[in-house]
Length: 271
Figure 1 (cartoon, helix red, strand yellow):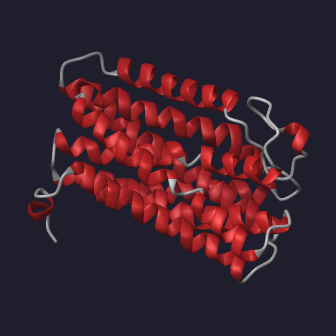
Figure 2 (tube, one colour; figure 1 turned 60 degrees about the vertical axis):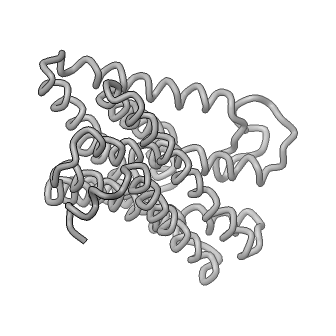
Figure 3 (cartoon, helix red, strand yellow; figure 1 turned 120 degrees about the vertical axis):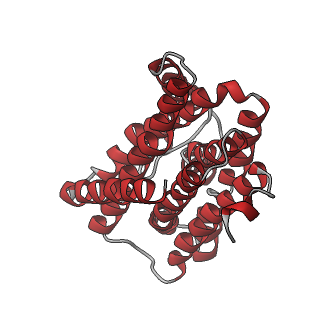
C-alpha cells in the first residue's frame, strides 16, 4: 500500500488503526503474565527506562519539532505554540492526577492520590496504569490528524514512526503492568485482562485527538505540543521515579538511553 492509496482513508480512520496497533502491542506485552509470575527488578527497571526514553524522544522529534517548524512556516512566532501547548499538556495531566483517584504500584492504599474514595485497591491500581496511556494515544491521534493539513511522505512517515515507537515501548510496558499485578495477588487471567485493558484508552484518546485537530486546524501546533507536554509529565511523574526504585538504577538509565536512541532513529529515518 503506497501513500497515494492511503490518501483515500480519513486521517481519523488512520489514527484509529494506528492506536489499535499500539493497544494490540500492549495486549501482547500483558500476555507475558501467562508465562511469568514475577519479573526481575533489573528487567523491570530497564523496561520502564526504555519506555521513558521512547516517550522523551517522541515528545521532541515527533511533536515539538514539527509544531515549531509548522508555526515558523506560517510566519508565526515559532516558539509560542510550543511553549503554551507544552505547559498546557503538563497542566492538564497534573489536574487529572489531582482529581482521578489512583494508586502507584507497591504503595499502600493510604498512599492513593487524587480525590479520596473507598474504591478497591485493584481499581486504583488500574486507574494509575491507564492514566499514563492517555497522552500516548493522544499523541498518535494528533500526529495522524495533522495529515488532514499536509498529507506528505514526511508527515505520514513521522506519524507512522510515532505509532511504531509508542507500540514498541508498549510491549515491555504491558508486561511491566500485568506481571506486578500478578504479584499484587491477581490471577494470571485477571492480571492479563487489566494489563491489556489499560491500553484501551489509547484508541479512544487517539481518535479524539485526530478529530480535534481536524475540526480546529489552527490549533495543530498547540495540539502537538500539548501531547508532548502530557507525555513528559508522565515520564517525570511516574516512569522515571518507578524505574529508579531499588538498586538497579543503571539498568533503567541504560534502558532510557536505548529507548531515546531507537525513537530518534525511527523518527529521523521514517519522517
